[in-house]
Image (cartoon, rainbow, N blue to C red; front, side, top):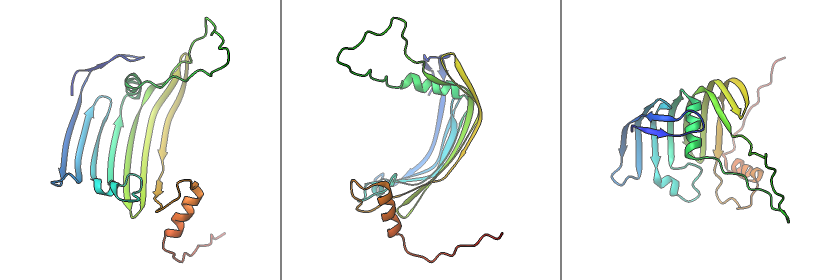
Length: 207
């Protein structure tokens, strides 16, 4: 893909190029998709998706859990120019404007009243790694995100955030036949009851 030009709130995005290389296998009925390697190469984003399996039947199964069709996934992404990328995203899909509160008699806005300036990423780069895996009815997502030299701003105000590192692990468990109005704690209790009981020994910390 070449010749992408978009007018943004900052510097215009001109003549951007994006190369996509795919090595994907599929069953004859396209029910299972094996992504061996997909490479993305551009100025705003570089990365690859690999060792990923998507099974559509798993996602359509009764009581299918979150992202059940994605059996496993691995991805690495680099964003060398966050400011340009964020400006491009805002130009393509600008945030919705907040509705003014309704009153019996709407007062006329002051002549000098202006909308709040839009927040933007002004500088920085980022890299991210994602690992997704299914085991039974549980889904585990391990994101690892690092941002460097991050600067944000709105209007005449800027903030030098610096470097940011995010490493975490998220586990989601589907619950069979959970009530539609069940609270989070009730659903969690159901999930714990569904797990096989095992004796666990707690190690005492030595003083």
